[in-house]
Image (tube, rainbow, N blue to C red; front, top):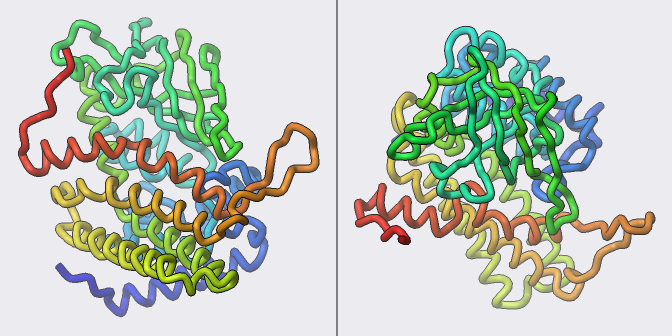
Amino acid sequence: MDLRFSDEDEAFRAEARAWLTEQLDGDFAKVRGRGGPGDEHALFDDRYEWEQHLGANGWTCVGWPVEHGGRGLSLHQQVIWFEEYARAGGPGRLGHIGEGLAGPTILHYGNDDQRARFLPGIVSGKELWAQGYSEPNAGSDLANIATRAEPDGDDWRISGQKVWTSLAHWSDWVFVLARTDRDAVPKHRGISYFLMPLRQEGVEIRPIQQITGTSEFNEVFFDGALALGADCVGGVNNGWKVAMGTLAFERGASTLGQQMHFRNELDAIVEVARGNGSIDDPTIRQRLAAAHAGLEIMRWNTLRVLSGPEEGELPPATMVTKLYWATWHRDLGELAMDVLGAEATLADQVVRPGDGYELTALQRLFLFTRSDTIYAGSNQIQRNIIGERGLGLPPEPKQR
């Protein structure tokens, strides 16, 4: 395990930092620091322009092979890019589902035709993607999906409902898990993985308003929507393996950028604590120190699990990542409110009647982090995964 960066890596860091500073101090200054969790609706058009600007300058999909539009960066340099992006206050990425989930899945499991048709739109930042996994009765129990696909010649007609579909109301495409064999045993054997356009007849998208007042995710209803047979990734009834591969891509180098964003949030809380004097409270000071220590542990553990072979599966220790950061981030939101004190309960009313209240960044942090321990596998499910797959403990008894 070698966590040091080479001279070549540091030269790349300087290049990335200089480019980001120039762009975010210039034409794109307005999007700096905007569009993060709880702030998803901010400056959408400007951030969409930023996505395409990144693509045009070779700063999307930096770890992808050069022949597919990426830079082919080493793991260390990918880490550097994501960290520098967060350090510079780069805006929330509209293309992160395409770049981080759909694209790597198509690269790994797709065929040459699928790569040729779908990857350029992701690299350019012009085509946005959403994830069609969860359903009202199939969240953590993903194999229980009810959305079905019925054959229509060489193609398929999709009917059913997906929920918690992030960014669907802005996206062009969605990758959807649907049941193509309702009699398959076990259930996950009858699932297929489709790439589908969202802007078509038979698709209805209903935004879900969250406690932050924004609608980052949606319900999506499919009523005979068309999925081309050519856009089934991995083959019919082989979607479970592909779906699990997609989930594995969530644990990659971009997590270091997420942690740098956490560092920015913690620094903002410390600044408030210094300004209002709450840093002199021994309990607050101890909690700030614990948050700092927890973030350092998070970073070094992530570097440790990413510092194995460049190719192959991540080690079992990766299983603790989601549980750890979600709990830490939720606690950070609570710390922010305690540092703010009574000020945490105040918000500015929006001028137009019915538009609610304008939240501060720390208020959005607190409210949004309520969801961190639920989405992408709740804390309870994460503990089951760690116990059963990581430690080899007996599986949890199934309810009859």
